[in-house]
Image (tube, rainbow, N blue to C red; front, side, top):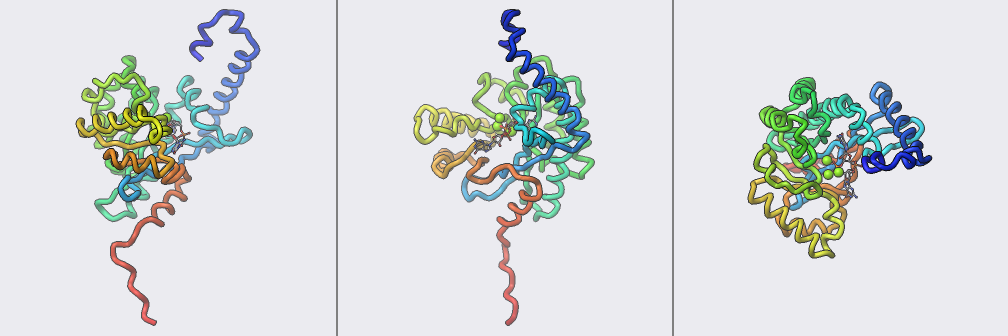
Length: 291
Ligand code: C2E
Ligand code: MG
Ligand code: MG
Ligand code: MG
């Protein structure tokens, strides 16, 4: 996109580009209506322990049910929402929904075994915007405890000096939430930021999982990330785990948590609630009814 914008003038007027621009404007106009008209849904993908696959939480993933286009994937509309700034109100809606869901699920759970819900934040939400207050309000509104929420940010945010990421991240950490780096390994690999910011978890990008069991170089990167994470006392989550072979490799390397189709696709809140309930094994077996 940025490259296309910089090209020569005749190309700028080419059919395909103006068509793309029109398409983008249409998407933007539709996005403006989407919140008010309740077209967004938040789905939840289970996150599990690699040892016994018990559910430790979920990642909240945004879904847009467009009245004519059907499901629009986040990779199509989130960049548009970021460019026009709509990601700020959309992101606030996501925070409110996810905190309310986290509170509802955790209120029904035994103490000491909380579900942690991860929420994706866009760098745009860190610009000219009181993100700490927005997060605090979302927690308060549903009496959600900060330890039930993890915030996912990207390396992109930490390396962009235009925002006030450092102060805001310290403020969020001070609220008691944990912070994770999403898609780790795909960015600029400026590893210094790992000790500068209050990061608790690395989510190893799913692009590394694909050939983890067939390509020694890929496996080597994942092994190195896990070693580094451990020595910096960071939590590790492998994303995009689709096969038992991948899970076995990760387990062997000491990775604690995983997320991926092997353990569950993103699902609507009610389905996630049922998914969790179906997997809780009662500590004391139910008494047999007398004959
Ligand atoms: P992400 O945060 O890295 O989320 C993980 C993506 O991997 C999700 O794509 C998920 O559906 C997909 N995935 C999970 N397990 C597997 C697997 O085993 N195999 C494969 N091939 N894919 C798997 P999704 O839902 O399409 O979201 C794409 C991206 O959109 C997210 O990447 C995130 O960056 C962004 N996004 C989603 N929801 C939000 C949101 O509420 N706010 C913001 N700012 N960004 C969001
Ligand atoms: Mg994420
Ligand atoms: Mg990711
Ligand atoms: Mg991603």
